[in-house]
Length: 551
Image (cartoon, helix red, strand yellow):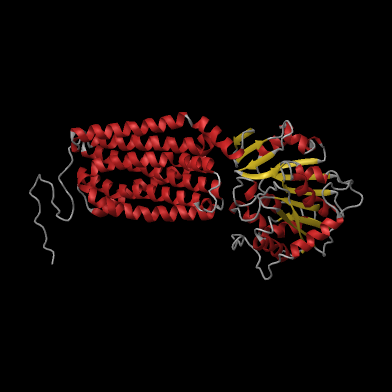
């Protein structure tokens, strides 16, 4: 049985043997002001902690793909580590001030440098063989664990500091602490996508967050609780904070050179254009002095100059056999699919719906890409709308198009999964005129047969009849797949397509159009047989509620 404690004499601090209570802190300010400053520190540290989490999720999605999986890994590992860190910090409560200062300095260094460290390892290690398949995830888990442990250790130490300023009931102290923490997390969560990422980028944004973190933690301890530290402890903590701040500032000064060197390590030495748009990172290499042009979006090879004609002819020409006066291209802002469409006589209007205006601008103005697409943006029949394809289709008129061409990233990338859902194909079906055709780029067949045939099953579930075909690529076959392309060894060797209409479609070429350079009727017949050999029967369709493209 626990006996009640006698009340403390007036004017003395209450005692509680179950805690590490050591009496009120000797503050340079009034207790109310000190308590406000501690809660302000909680607010800033919570904002920084959430920025670290979001930065890891964003970078992992960029390097590895599949943002849902990466977010789940980061958040679950980090929350688990926070619990472990909170338990471990119980032993540090008797030295709460100096422990909190040391933890904040370490957290600022680890969190601030995490983005640069992850990207550096990715850029300069390249392919680690079998190990590299899990390398980014191992690094991601390691950083998530470290940051989670440090964030979790903050809570009991901050609780101790608040109680040392003014003893209060545990429920009230927890409510105040968590209120500041959650509001700070809100600010950090909004600042990352709307301020840090678009204005500073991932690397500089993480470094700046680390600098704010170390300044807030150091100021709180060295300013408010300096009398709790020995003279030696104050100097050690001051030197540690200045060292961390100096390292972060030096890294920020070198970010430009680092990004250029890392970009060359990833993409090669002939990078001509590199920019972070509001949608994605856009990198263009080659295209001059006889070098093939390659276009990377978010690190994935979208256009390979050596093989793009084989891909775009296979995508466009079978769909153009039949009525094709009005053509809709979803994606395809590079203009390469439109180039093939405009080769067909009788085309009166081509509408392109592209999400990223920077891709359209580059296709118009870059000499290499404009030359590759045949300067199609100078054709008056071509009209561009910058919009999300799903939202745009919802407002499209019924029966408005004879041909709908989906030139979109492969299924499996979370952001594009909705563009391969039954609901999306239902909207595309509504936009088709009687006798119209829909063609879908459905990803590589050999490496992802289940995802490919799920696309085909989903198109059929939307009320369309289908024929699937598989075209082999060359040595540098490009893909818009869920894995970041780091070299030809990882590129797929084929592309899969699904041609669909309300009646059973016939795969053929329009005899009135110029003959494709890389495609023949015999090759199309072989493409149908090649796809049929990989069929995976009995697959359910993918919907917005139940996406089914994760292999």
